[in-house]
Amino acid sequence: MNDRGFAKRLAQELTRWQNEGWVSAEGRQAILADVAARQPKMTWASWLAVAGALLLGVGVVTWFAAHWNEISKLMKLALIFGALVGSHVAHGFCLTRATLPKLAEGIALLSVLFFGAAIMLVGQIYHIDAHFPDGIALWAAGGFLTAWLFGSQPAMVASLALAAVWTWNEQFIYQAMNWPLIGYLVLTAVLLYRHGWQVAVRGWGGLLILWMIGWHAHPWIGADWGSQAHIRLFALQVLALAGCWALAQASAHPFARAARAGFLLAALIGCFAFTFPNFALGYAKPAGDLAPWLAALAGATALYFAGAISVARASELPAVRLGIGLALATALALLLACEVVLPRSSGLPALLWNAIFLGLLYWLGDLGIRHGDRAMVNHAFMGFFIWLLARYFDTFWTLMDRALFFMAGGVLLLAGGGWLERSRRALLRDIDGARRT
Amino acid sequence: MTLWMKIALLALAQIAALSAMIADKQWTLNTGTPVVLQTEPVDPRSLFMGDYARLNYQISRLRLDGEAGVGGDKEFKRHDTVWVAIRPDPAGAQAVSVHHQRGAIGPGLLALKGEVQSFSEFEWDRATSKSVKQRTLSLRYGIEQYYVQEGTGGQVERPPDGGKVSILVAIDARGKAGILAVLLDGRERYRETLF
Image 1 (cartoon, rainbow over the protein chains, first blue to last red):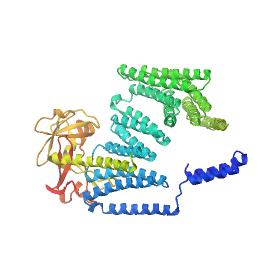
Image 2 (image 1 turned 30 degrees about the vertical axis):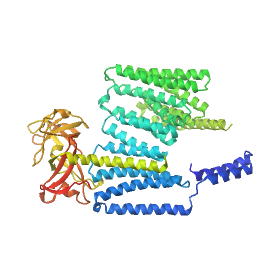
Image 3 (image 1 turned 90 degrees about the vertical axis):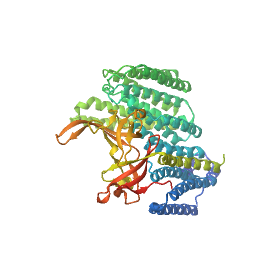
Image 4 (image 1 turned 120 degrees about the vertical axis):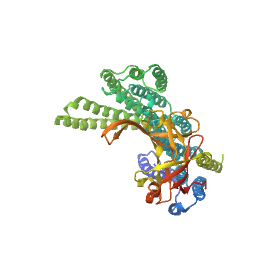
């Protein structure tokens, strides 16, 4: 919510709080006066100045674009470098004015865009036709440096988005392992850990997961998608992501709190995939030497149980609930280890997976309610609903040509979905009520 | 560190990165061995790709089998890095062989680094209306785009009056190539300069 929106909402809430007797009339006035005093004021003159600067900027850009061919290379370079430095100076000017924090953020983002434009224009002027993802990586590095030096979350988010484009191209288009991304992820994690930017941390988690998905596109795993190597890798990734979630869940640091929802969602999606009876049956081709996979399994298991133990230590759950949670965690680890070691030969493991998946959803929902974590409750309910729908289609797929299939599906969606949503809302209300008291 | 020092540091780092891009290209042009490459007509230019000429060379498509085939390795994958042995010739350089390793290129030949765009094992024989085994490699060398003045890209891709376009490139010690000049019927039409 922006500052103006916050003040408006606060004024509305304060009236109610005053009527309830929680806040005195003097207190209400004092709070509103304090908020008003702390809000940066954007006068009409400021708006006119911003509009004027934008118009001037658009005019200058279009003039140079129209005359670009007639300008010498040296002049072009001077213009590019000048625009880049100018954006940084404008950013610095806004930062020195306490009344222009939003504009400073916008110009920080603009300077990141200018750096990208500069890379492309220099490439055009000097006919540089290099490995395309390298240019994106350089652009992302420029954005990261801006975020690092000025503590700018918009620049960090832009850099993370560029890094996603970079790794997408390297891994999915060029099918090369993007090792340098590890360095980028570590450096950005240090910065995000320091600042705890919520949006950027979520983007960081998404980038990590995208990079992990990209491993499946590499030739080293085998160009043959029928190889069990993909299933082994997938199971290890789910185990590692579940471990990352558990470690983040046990920590109260803003970085961990922002990252854990993404890890949980990715791990749940991974577990859900294993609940399909035919999921791994088509991947029966041998994956080669088991030894390196066992070593990777040992590493992922260590991470997973480090997380599980951290959650158990940090949790205030009753002993019985905690015991159920640890039993489910162990069962999940065992099932994933089986997927790594033994190729599936029947749909039987899917039965166990379904049981474990439902147990996990129940336990997560319970944990979410006890910790007042709305996101975890939402994940549990959404997971259950999707699971129910998937099993309905799995079970009654052969009746696809019957009207009954659609009628029953419709009833299931309407009744089941309505009941689930009502239960979810009631739970969230309870959580909010528990928070207030 | 003060705010203005941070701004100076950021500006310097970014300008240094951009200058490094230019210096790398210029190093290739200044130290590389000049070689003339013959071009081949390309498909009509996409309007969405800006105003540049797309260049296709005789060495962009290499046959690996038969009498016209080049020597060297025979199995490749998309996006593989390859080394093409080039024999310079004023009438147009010829590809002699193609390899996965640079060390396989013999003395007296230039090593040009490329990237596999596609590798096909069969081609359609129009005479017999059958698919015949003919391994063909499509390569990219990073010299396939040349930005030109607005409205003139088509003249380079498809010159008027049957003119012949060839490109003078420089190939440096790292196997990287850069366009030195665009030649129309052997005469310089565009020449690359630093500024």
